[in-house]
Length: 247
Length: 227
Image (cartoon, rainbow over all chains, first blue to last red; front, side, top):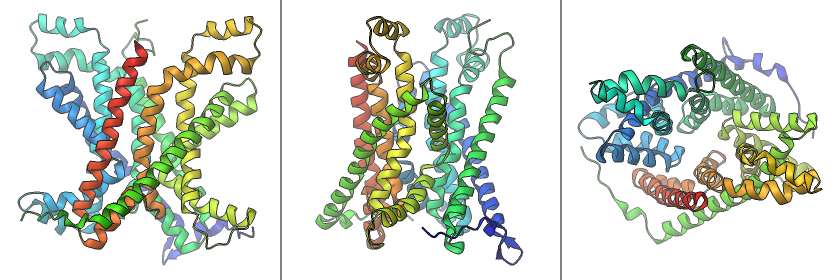
């Protein structure tokens, strides 16, 4: 093979005043902001759904269960295309028209955040449910016996412990959000993957480009991991051992 | 304004194209599951090996593939595999290498995920089992082959199947290298007929029915194993 290696390609001018490295970094910024926005949506929805799933009765837990199955059994790519192409068409009132009137970048970004957020929330819901169910049933009963209402029991007794217990499995969910965000490149959002493809088209240096993109994804993963390790250390219950059993 | 649905775009010829696409999706998934479990088992054994070089290689391999998006891995192999086929096997550059690239990418990528499931499965077998096998005079690989792995795989069946469902959903991503799997076929028909909305809803429904029934099956199988 006579491939012409050129690692200096990243410092070539892509446009006046912009190097190819700038393109990659703007893609990185897009991947990170998309991942963080989606994570925010996923946390709020996921914890709410996880709580619903553990409530007494049949209707609410059933609804939350259906929510999980719905988002877990359709490929992420199909969901993304549905958010981007289908939702604006079928939304009632002027809402769909309003979305179609936004600038294209905002349409792509909103669809990607909604898609990744909902998809991840279904997975977080299952973690939260497992966390709450891992607590001894006496905790809920004790809270209720003390005269707390059910919401108070969740707020002051169950969730503070359950959310701490699930930090380790949530770490891998957090890292997965950034990896999954790469599908957004397929609806045209200029994230890290899309910028990488564009660089290959412009520079014809695929090996250097893909190596750089891969290293940047590794860096994102490492940062996500250390961020979650920091959270884990911060929220650990004083006196509790790392594995969750008392010391 | 409400959208006027028109599902007439799904006619006989469209169904034939969709069936062809589904065959491609299933083929990729089947090859990736088989190759992924085989290579994943080797990786798991290597990772637990006493030889530093082997365990280091397996750990690096697994961590690398688990840190990179599948879309990126597909793009990588769509770059490498055709060049490899041309320079090593002497195939003409005009050969369609998308399927080969996708198969290699999926097999190598999923092996990293399977390796972690299988490692957990092997570690879940009681330690005394290995000691007992050694005491019976078995060598390490014999103990693995006849004592540890059979028990480990029995415990792992639900996890392996769940991963296969995830993998089947992931095959939709071959869209990125323009391979016409089920999703690619559905989207293509929708685009040509100006009925993307209907075709996406159909694709979602089909994937949901397949994956949901498969996950019910896994749940049934989990109950069978645990009793």
